Length: 212
Image (cartoon, rainbow, N blue to C red; front, side, top):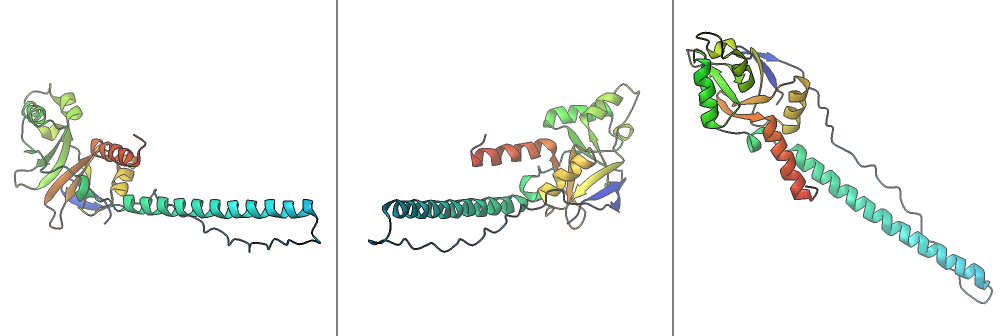
């Protein structure tokens, strides 16, 4: 399922290209048939020893190719598993939200209490209408009697629970966004994924693979 852009509650479909294509491993060429090692009274000793050395080298090369092929196969399988991680597996839920007429000072306090940096914003008819982040609220908090509407993001990305995490990461980078809201099939808010969630996923995978 592709990501879409919301513009004040209206879906706008956007093309999303995958910049993380699955890595493919070229098949190894077939090994040459192992040469027979002639041995007999008519074979010079030096030539016989060289043939033995050549045979050992071929055997070692074949074993090396087999090991490389097995490693590449495991790496490709691991990459395939990673690409199957979807939004529902890492999203945070429930999503902390507020109404569009909520005072900015109250929204900031709400963020501090919940320990979050983003709030989903609903209009007075309880329809999802935007997203605000802590930085934008702090920028506008000195406006007299200002509500979160003064800091709301008019365009924001949404995904479905089955959207691939790599696709979400790609779009956060492309559109310079810090978060994606996750909506179910009935457009009900199900969760949120932030850059912090993606970093946590990266670290957890690194620990599992032994490089963190």
